[in-house]
Image 1 (cartoon, rainbow, N blue to C red):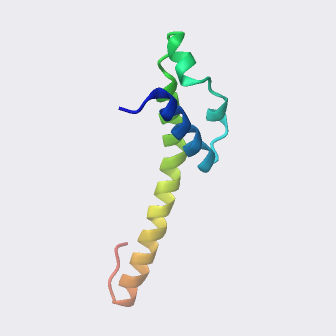
Image 2 (image 1 turned 45 degrees about the horizontal axis):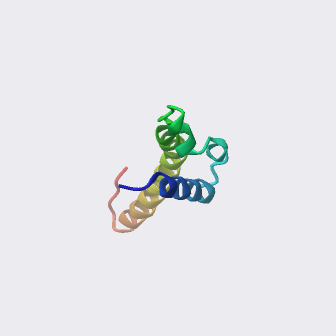
Length: 79
């Protein structure tokens, strides 16, 4: 299990790399949990997913377009 401070560092690094600005304004997860707010990881997960899913779908669509173009050259298609 990941220690909460390590989770916080990893989460902030992921958010910075994904350019998710609003998560960086969330309170420190250790402090939040001390005050009874255990929702920080869930909030973070939700925000990361909200950002990551469209990126992943776009990448998948790009890859499918390449595959389809290759199939068209072979006289086939996935359309």
